[in-house]
Image (cartoon, rainbow, N blue to C red; front, side, top):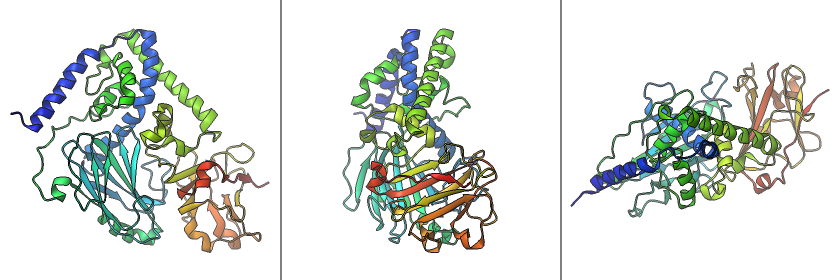
Length: 466
């Protein structure tokens, strides 16, 4: 009798052998170009996710390494302009990270009880970058609990004291924790909460012998051009080996196979003819052009909100251009019922915001503050560096926790000043310092109310002062 680990290994090998035959490049150049466009839009988010996986969980000597697979890593700090690891850093929350390998058994994530007025969430993301579920304030509350994350091959039973099971389409998945930070004095409390986040395999949780280990993964090292050249398809093939094929994608994946894309199959870029390679490169360029047009015509004009670019497979309905746009504009963005954001790039006259040319105001009319059940924030960034703006006040955002200390308008509205020059002392409570240079600002809402996603609530303009 063949044991389960051996059967799984043989099954995996049979898949690789069988795909080798039908993953050959059989498309004509004109067919290949059209297929490569679709495959690029489909695969870009997967490959961008792999970059993050590699830097955070594989490359132990790297500056951005967080923790090995199936272990949790934390970042508890009040962000300042010195923190330049990522573009447009978010000072609202401290992050924790778990890259999950679900091949042999599920993982159990335990959340501690936290105070009612603090927002926290665990965003669960499969390798396609779908947000498969959330844990935390909105979805499961602040009382903590035990939550099991299972891969597509798991067929076991849910332990009685596990509050919820979340199934992932892929055996590689990501848990991204966000814990609200009130201010710099709050960091010790945030670290205490993060210490209460635990991750353990199901066997350890139920105190049973662990299953046999899965095969060791040979992680391909990222390259500089992996996201915008035919090399992308090599990394896509690698990652798709960790995902269960979906019925809704069978026809699409069969098309992809005609240019050599298949789960687990090698994609040998060096063996392509010059004509084949050019067809793939042209297809990638077509995909990039499609995104540029979509961004200009639909995203920049706010006909499509940022929240529409993220979510589950059911929510996105296999709209691969939307999924690509989400990964391109901000990888791992929040689903619309969890998070909303708006960016001020241009002022009310259609000109780029520039602290050297104007002072600006954002005026919220009475009862028209950003409608968020958790909290909101307005954060300002230097347009050139995409980082927080240094200033002697050490103020990088204004948020809803600061409302009791702000100065209100006589009519009950609220006016914020975004400017480089320091205002009179009586008006400094509402001042968000800007650089003497181009800038942009991001309004974020945590647990936005329905009128945000429906478009009923309107973002007030960034108005230049004459």
